Image (cartoon, rainbow, N blue to C red; front, top):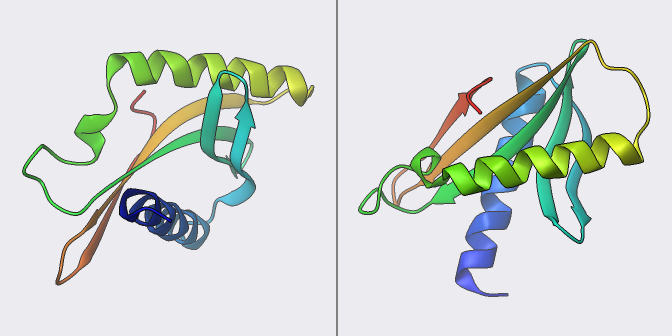
Length: 117
């Protein structure tokens, strides 16, 4: 496994644990279709949450959340629509979150940005 892939997997594991500790229920992780992948789908009460997880080992190129570009946001919306087609059900509300994981040599900092996309 490449270092970048290992860092990403670590970040997704940390994000999933953080969301569960915050009371969200994980519905799915790493859901894939031909258009791409949704990192985490979760329930926050009656709200269906699509989470993009970004992990970095430093901030030389910006924070992890800053890496969620406008193009990535558009693609996440397309992926969410595809997920919803594959899982027909009515949801009270939809939300798009970013979970930012910064793993430095000394610590791991998690920032959950709810409803930012």
